[in-house]
Amino acid sequence: MNREEAIKKLEKYEQNHILKFFDELNEEEKEELLKQIDETDFSIIDTLKNKNAKNKKGEYSPLRAMQISEIEENKEKFHEAGVKAIKEGKTAALLLAGGMGTRLGSDNPKGMYNIGLTKDVYIFQRIIENLLDVVNETGFHIRLFIMTSEKNHEATVNFLKEHNYFGYQADRISFFKQDMAPACDYEGKVYLESKNRIATSPNGNAGWYMSMLNAGLGEILESEGIEWINVFAVDNVLQRILSPEFVGATILSGVSVGSKVVRKSAPDEKVGVMCLEDGKPSIVEYYELSEEMMNAKDENGDPAYNYGVILNYLFNVAELDKIGRNNLETHIVEKKIPYINDAGESIKPEEPNGYKFEQLVLDLIHMMDSCLPYEVVRENEFAPIKNKTGVDSVESARKLCELNGIAL
Ligand code: UTP
Image 1 (tube, rainbow, N blue to C red):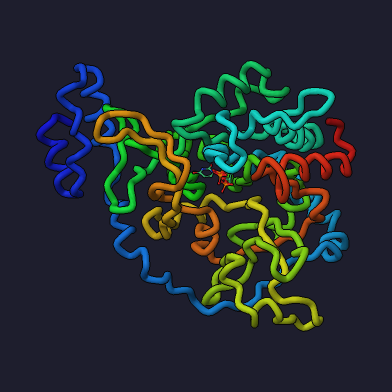
Image 2 (cartoon, rainbow, N blue to C red):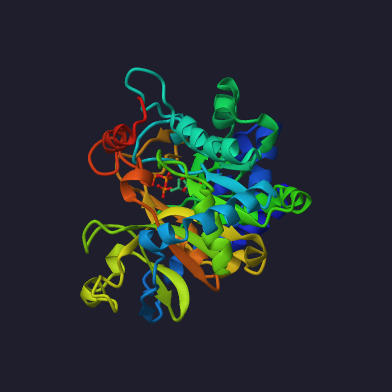
């Protein structure tokens, strides 16, 4: 893209200020900025126009979860079906590690965080060790995809290489970068991060499938015959990935996606709850849960909306192929965005100063025809690290690791 073409594109989106420092740049920097303008989708900023139009939700109804007692009764059958699929190479794991982990407040990728007390125990290590349990049990080297972002790709790849992938077979790991979205001020003007770079941030965790296809990894899915992908978050240090029973139950249920869920600890717990929306699987956010839904009971007298999601989903690849990215809702998130001011000085704001744009994996669930909520024991499988202290923190996760006999 040359300067004239860039001006044309920017005029269309009223973002001409991006070229403010253009004449001060050297040739290489000019080229970098023009390339970024060419690649950036500014149309996402239009989402702001509908910011206040409340997103219309459909009619909610309960979605029955497969509970632990039922899983226990069918354990052998599920286990056998799961192990078979894993051994046949039909399943892959996909680690979502493109987030910025701002709440934890470390500059490194979240997975590099060391939760050990007497020895090193990195978050990435915990996850890989759990996946290796399944590899060792089945004897099959499961394909592991790792999604990073432009902001943390190099650090992630180098760290894992330095640690010899914590024992995982290197040629079974495929990295790819997720797409970025521009970040803007409250008036919708895109920030400049430096004189030759637009401020961008990872575009949310729903983009994983499109980003992996854009990176050419669809070829691996095809050539290896991968039919199911277990997508999971980096920050749960007790995350069990591709547990054979979960894989078996999902496949035998004939659903488009399986979702691990935990029983809520209180009716008003701040987790997204699995349900149906207009007859399709959906996740209702805790702040959208009405009093009536909170108190609703099922046929056994148990709470009808009682199972929270833990960001561990087993997606059917053929079902994913049916949906397009543009059908997904874009969420506008208020954040602190570092930028350069009109004088070209770098500013690191203390308070939120604008918006980032994200598409979320929970909206992807609503694009699926059917879903199996699959209950797991909370204390054994859910130890998220979002904050430094308090709820969902390094402290709470360490306690849960101890409870599970994991030496730290
Ligand atoms: P979170 O919603 O906790 O976001 O991500 P985050 O960026 O890690 O943390 P905060 O909100 O800034 O503190 C849940 C999972 O989704 C991944 C994260 O890496 C984590 O595994 N994620 C999130 C992405 O892969 N890409 C994104 O753009 C956002």
